[in-house]
Image 1 (tube, rainbow, N blue to C red):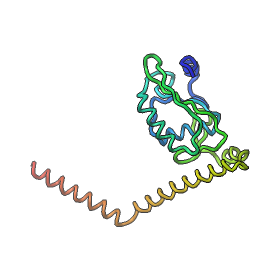
Image 2 (image 1 turned 45 degrees about the horizontal axis):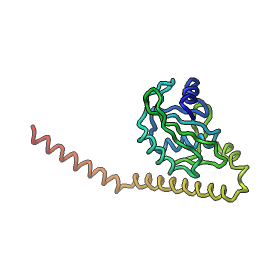
Image 3 (image 1 turned 90 degrees about the horizontal axis):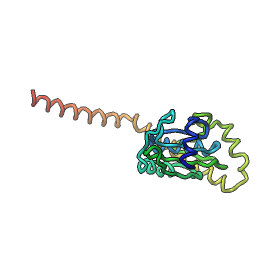
Image 4 (image 1 turned 180 degrees about the vertical axis):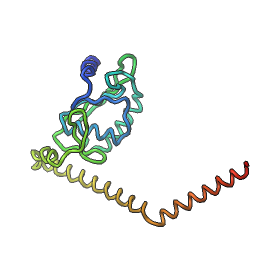
Length: 192
């Protein structure tokens, strides 16, 4: 992609294959965006641009670090590349994502682009995506590993929620709060 191509696409704003971000929020959200494009028609995420096409620039080092962390959350990792451009003397990062023939999982689910929105894939869309490749052993292996990973995440979250509702955890939290409150009360008493 060239600066001219970026500027041309910026004229039309966001769409199913083009996402604009002032900055990347976090690796999890970034993995969601990359996976959605890979599960759809592919496309670009341009970081350092505020809609409507206002170049604000970004910290390219920080952006590339977030993309690298997001990459570790993708399963399988789709074909994508990153490139830093200088537009109006400001750094802009372009993440160019190719459409994937495999179902790409992000950190927490399977997403797709519909219009300007990223949303969870329906079971029907998932079925359509994997039907042509079900006879491929590699794809079945990849899908089973992704489902296993998602199951572990869900199980860990369920355990965390369960533990946070136990009486002894609540008692511990209340005891810590009481000690902190007493300490603050004591210190305030010294100053009055």
